[in-house]
Amino acid sequence: MVTTVKVCAAVAGKPIAHSLTPDLFRIVADRLRESGCKVNIEMAEKFETTTLVNALAWGHSQKQALSNQDDGADSGRREVWLSLTSPLKHQMPPDSGTEWVVGEPMLACANQMRHDGHVWRVASTDGLGLVLLAKEFGFEFDKKDTREQPLLCMNGGGSTARSCAAAWVEAGGSIWWKGGRRSLSHRGPWRSALVEGLQLAEHNGRRLHADFDVEPGTASEPIGDRIPLEDPGEAPILLSITYDGNKGESSVETEWGLHLDGRWLLAAQHLEAWRHLYLPQFADSLPSLRDLVGAIEGMS
Image: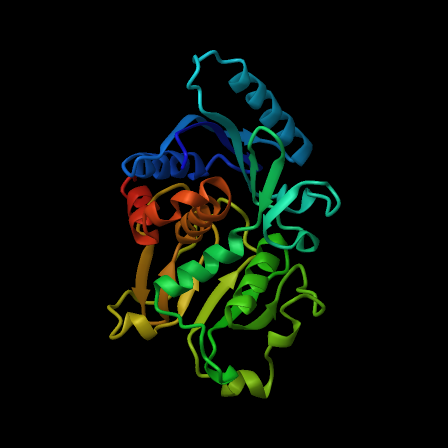
């Protein structure tokens, strides 16, 4: 088990002024220390850049600074953790030599990186986060009848969209691609799960709507009159993948369904990063998705 881990963490990309990722690093670390994991976030900051090279250079400089610390015999591990956002996610070359822990290099969606002192390891957790979110709200992915499988109704085909489409299909869902600025390739791992036409008309399973073409850092107002849903566990999910800081309610019930803002996907993919990349040995001690969203919502 882990004794002590000292971490320099950052979120890198542009724009990131609104990002809550540094807060998430600290919140999760605090929860894990309650379970006996001595993870110390030495820093958690925002590094604004449009190139992955600059982000990696920042990481190496912080790794060197950590290595130069003299803490005696029981110094523990020293690591650098990077959370990548737009436009850095697609900049990792498939043949970069980094070790992929989660995800497929050819999908070009690297949004989490960890340098453990020897090598950079990479994960794509956006898709895993979307599936975690869906399961949190009662979506069931074990349906044999394709007409009852959870349906991801999506716009866009960028890096986050590709990660989410691949993970959704692997979990057992179907996809309705509605369009967008960037197309979703029909040759991806989701190709056999795309539905349209008559298949779409006959589908009666739960639906999750997400627009992956919206600009980062923009707020999304719920559509429709606010009313309590008779059965939120059966309602469609209308997910915004962005958020504007940490203002307002993170979930709102309306006549059209349950609206979730981008903090839900942010928290979900962050938990999956800890579970698969950062400290997988403490996966069972991580806070729940609802607890983590509640913590960042409570900061407003």
